Length: 225
Image (tube, rainbow, N blue to C red):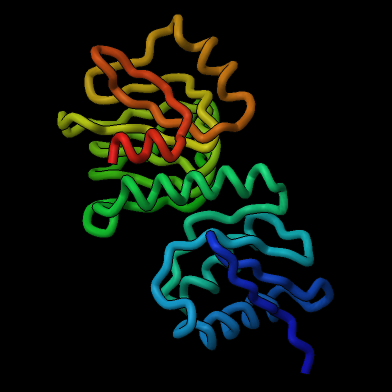
């Protein structure tokens, strides 16, 4: 019998090699069976997943992620491509998640998919968006906000009035950004946009009486952890 799904684990996730000829519905069933058989081996982990071997639509990717999570104890944080730079960005994002979201297991929420067409996502507690926040869309949280994608719309974090909240994204080009009572200043915007063009994962934090943007580095994580 032909092996239509092959798994390869790596440091920050799992590569899923897919047969390019089999029908998608059968392929999704095979992915589910493969992860069900491997559930004990992988255990309970947060992982990035890459799909190799065939082109997939966003809907097909989501269906395969559902097949994985329904047949294992894995939590798929993001789907990555073959691009080496993107792999590095997601590695940094996963590191950020591990450092700053231990509390997510208790009060955090996850939203898988991109916000489009003026969508507004409002939550109690912290939120992780597994996708992009497009221009014209908003994420509003009483806690922290992590966007494992591009933040091009608006983000409002720290609605509970507590200090120490943040907004982090793989690419940070927000239309509006507010943490607690502090907004980013308009004069900062052009500098932010210039720094964000390279796709550097960045974190917005309150420093003094203003919101500042910093590249996500090990030094920053160690300083704020």
